[in-house]
Amino acid sequence: MAKKPTKSKKKVRSTGKGKTARKAARRPNPAFMRPVTPSSALAEIVGDKPIPRTELTKRLWAYIKKHRLQDAQNKRMINADDKLTAVFGGKGAVNMFEMTKLVNKQVE
Image (cartoon, rainbow, N blue to C red; front, side):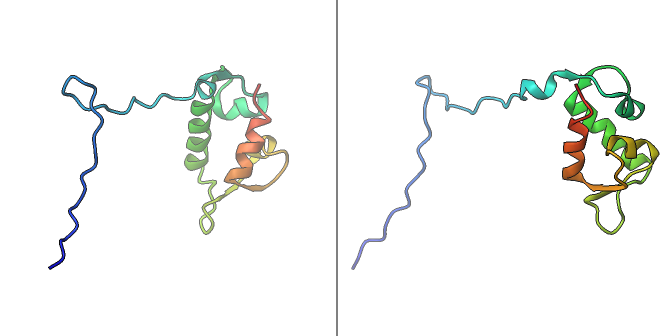
Protein backbone atom coordinates (compact mmCIF):
# COMPACT_ATOMS: atom_id res chain seq x y z
CA MET A 1 0.00 0.00 0.00
CA ALA A 2 1.54 3.29 -1.15
CA LYS A 3 1.53 6.38 1.05
CA LYS A 4 -0.48 9.35 -0.11
CA PRO A 5 1.55 12.53 -0.43
CA THR A 6 0.70 15.02 2.28
CA LYS A 7 -0.39 18.49 1.33
CA SER A 8 2.25 21.02 2.06
CA LYS A 9 1.24 24.17 3.85
CA LYS A 10 2.51 27.52 2.69
CA LYS A 11 4.96 29.04 5.08
CA VAL A 12 4.17 32.47 6.44
CA ARG A 13 7.14 34.62 7.26
CA SER A 14 7.15 35.69 10.88
CA THR A 15 8.44 39.01 12.14
CA GLY A 16 9.72 37.30 15.25
CA LYS A 17 7.12 38.78 17.60
CA GLY A 18 4.33 36.35 16.83
CA LYS A 19 2.82 38.54 14.08
CA THR A 20 2.92 37.75 10.39
CA ALA A 21 4.50 40.15 7.94
CA ARG A 22 2.09 42.18 5.76
CA LYS A 23 2.63 43.95 2.49
CA ALA A 24 3.32 47.65 2.69
CA ALA A 25 0.54 49.94 1.50
CA ARG A 26 0.78 50.92 -2.15
CA ARG A 27 1.95 54.48 -2.69
CA PRO A 28 1.03 56.57 -5.74
CA ASN A 29 3.77 57.60 -8.13
CA PRO A 30 4.74 61.21 -7.30
CA ALA A 31 5.12 62.02 -11.02
CA PHE A 32 1.36 61.63 -11.46
CA MET A 33 0.67 63.94 -8.52
CA ARG A 34 2.90 66.78 -9.80
CA PRO A 35 0.71 69.67 -11.01
CA VAL A 36 0.74 70.35 -14.75
CA THR A 37 -0.46 73.48 -16.50
CA PRO A 38 -2.97 72.88 -19.31
CA SER A 39 -2.72 74.76 -22.60
CA SER A 40 -5.37 77.36 -23.46
CA ALA A 41 -7.32 74.86 -25.59
CA LEU A 42 -7.32 72.25 -22.83
CA ALA A 43 -8.03 74.89 -20.17
CA GLU A 44 -11.46 75.50 -21.72
CA ILE A 45 -12.36 71.93 -20.72
CA VAL A 46 -10.52 71.24 -17.45
CA GLY A 47 -9.80 74.73 -16.06
CA ASP A 48 -6.76 76.96 -16.25
CA LYS A 49 -5.17 76.27 -12.85
CA PRO A 50 -2.30 73.74 -12.50
CA ILE A 51 -3.71 70.35 -11.48
CA PRO A 52 -2.25 66.85 -11.13
CA ARG A 53 -2.33 64.64 -14.22
CA THR A 54 -4.75 62.26 -12.51
CA GLU A 55 -7.26 65.04 -11.86
CA LEU A 56 -6.84 66.32 -15.43
CA THR A 57 -7.79 62.87 -16.74
CA LYS A 58 -10.82 62.70 -14.45
CA ARG A 59 -12.07 66.10 -15.61
CA LEU A 60 -11.50 65.25 -19.27
CA TRP A 61 -13.48 62.00 -18.96
CA ALA A 62 -16.24 63.83 -17.04
CA TYR A 63 -16.50 66.27 -19.96
CA ILE A 64 -16.61 63.42 -22.51
CA LYS A 65 -19.32 61.57 -20.57
CA LYS A 66 -21.36 64.74 -19.90
CA HIS A 67 -21.46 65.68 -23.59
CA ARG A 68 -21.86 62.03 -24.75
CA LEU A 69 -18.78 62.13 -26.97
CA GLN A 70 -17.91 58.45 -26.58
CA ASP A 71 -18.93 56.47 -29.67
CA ALA A 72 -22.00 54.26 -29.05
CA GLN A 73 -20.81 51.25 -31.07
CA ASN A 74 -17.07 51.41 -30.41
CA LYS A 75 -16.56 52.69 -26.86
CA ARG A 76 -12.82 53.12 -27.46
CA MET A 77 -13.45 55.97 -29.88
CA ILE A 78 -13.99 59.56 -28.77
CA ASN A 79 -15.89 61.86 -31.14
CA ALA A 80 -14.56 65.40 -30.77
CA ASP A 81 -16.74 68.49 -30.45
CA ASP A 82 -15.41 71.99 -31.19
CA LYS A 83 -13.41 72.26 -27.95
CA LEU A 84 -11.91 68.78 -28.21
CA THR A 85 -11.02 69.22 -31.88
CA ALA A 86 -8.55 71.94 -30.83
CA VAL A 87 -7.05 69.60 -28.21
CA PHE A 88 -6.88 66.66 -30.64
CA GLY A 89 -5.00 68.66 -33.27
CA GLY A 90 -7.92 68.99 -35.69
CA LYS A 91 -8.93 65.31 -35.65
CA GLY A 92 -12.65 64.56 -35.49
CA ALA A 93 -12.36 61.21 -33.72
CA VAL A 94 -9.54 59.48 -31.87
CA ASN A 95 -9.22 56.30 -29.85
CA MET A 96 -8.71 56.65 -26.12
CA PHE A 97 -5.04 55.62 -26.29
CA GLU A 98 -4.28 58.22 -28.95
CA MET A 99 -6.21 60.75 -26.86
CA THR A 100 -3.73 60.31 -24.01
CA LYS A 101 -0.82 61.03 -26.33
CA LEU A 102 -2.52 64.14 -27.76
CA VAL A 103 -3.45 65.48 -24.32
CA ASN A 104 0.14 65.05 -23.11
CA LYS A 105 1.20 67.51 -25.81
CA GLN A 106 -1.24 70.05 -24.34
CA VAL A 107 0.28 70.18 -20.84
CA GLU A 108 3.42 71.82 -19.48
